[in-house]
Image (tube, rainbow, N blue to C red; front, side):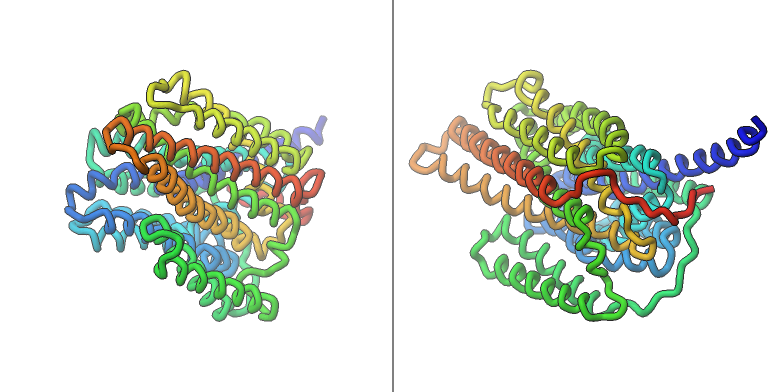
Length: 492
């Protein structure tokens, strides 16, 4: 009885600190994830206000993607070298200031600069948050719950961005789609100062300059080329040139990492089957996700005539389904059975939901046509995100936690860029194919749009099936490895 009195209070205190730390980290993740869609909702209004063309609008999106996607590996490594809490705070404050700059933009150039700076600081923030989560929650059951919540935020953040962006744009101003980050960041900074405590930073070698240069330039070229594919086509020099250059530079990056003493991305991180399976699965599923958020938004706005707020509200059932499975089955089963049975099942469920969306027509309704597919997709995604993010950082040495966390964000960004380019290209081809030889009446144009959406939803379903196959092939059976020497808690 005496041992119970002695042992329980410290455990309770540590647990309380850890769960408060999770709230802080989840807030930061929410800010980064929702920013990908909240600004998209605001863009048409911002375009009218600031007077820029569609090409400029594309660069508001691409500027963020280029900076974020290309600097994630460096941001992750710096968090390992300089301290994760320090990089977390730098990322939070920098992201907030960049958001304030964007909200105050008086022209296109200022807005693009602000978005690029958001990407820079997001690349510092995202891997630091995930690696802090990994080193804070080391006991398997608690880790499963924590990654369940974090995975739910990752899966649901895009939909939350659609809803919040619609509300702010319609009732306040498009500028508040950026200013809102100041409020989120202020809460997260206060929580980080009070509740987060980092591990001591061990001595490290120098930054891998050749690896950093080839990784950053290679990722910039790849994302840039993929962004051009949507507008210029796959065979244009502006698309093929950067993509080929990016692939060559990334091959050179791998060759450098095999030889340098202190690599930017130690190959031991990605060659582990569970981590490799996690990175591959999330990249492919990320490509499929764009079929949901991007093209279903087009359907809701263009065919069903939903307002921005109604469009955001329409995604709420999917977000609830993501949170349900991510925080229950995804968190409770992952520590016991590992990701191998969960991720393939989740991806196949999501593929089934996408298949339902291929039945949408001009006269479909939200309740009977859209809602069932959305709920099924959400149930599947919850089983994909929580276990993959857990697996991406499980069993990794603490000195590599930052860069291992950066990889999950990098592959999701690249997968999303590939998905956007491919699905947009398939949609355009399907629409033009339907229109060929027909009189371009409003009804024919609307039906052409439906054909393009069907094509995209079928391809997205295919991406999810591929993610299921890859996950089943790469993940090891059994529970995830957890570092047995990890400290019991990293939060006050």
